[in-house]
Image (cartoon, rainbow, N blue to C red; front, side, top):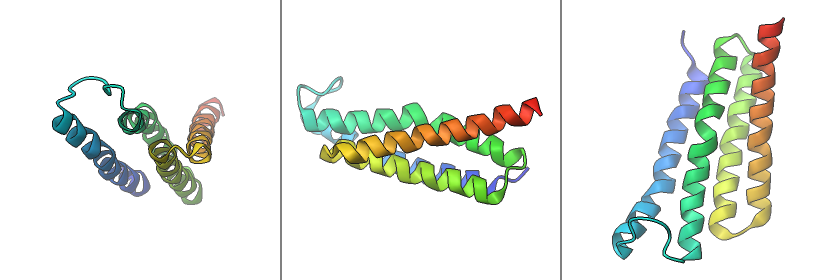
Length: 127
């Protein structure tokens, strides 16, 4: 089965993960800090933005993909995918720049995507 929306979302997420990871890798190399953040708060924020992305995005993409595979409307799947993409950009920006509203809004939107997609999947199996 072809999953064009989920495929585009996964591709964009892969690229965004590299964009989040590259500054962490370069900073580690420059400072020879192979573990932790060495007490550097700005570096810690970059590490957490990358880690938080890894913690939430894979399951979100999987859930969106299953909604798409199970016949969810294109509008619903696009809405979930767009919301997740915006949420993760907001969250990363909020962490990197210490703008609490970006981080909080990004987290709430990510939770919303997980709740809606999860709810659709559970409801679809119970009906």
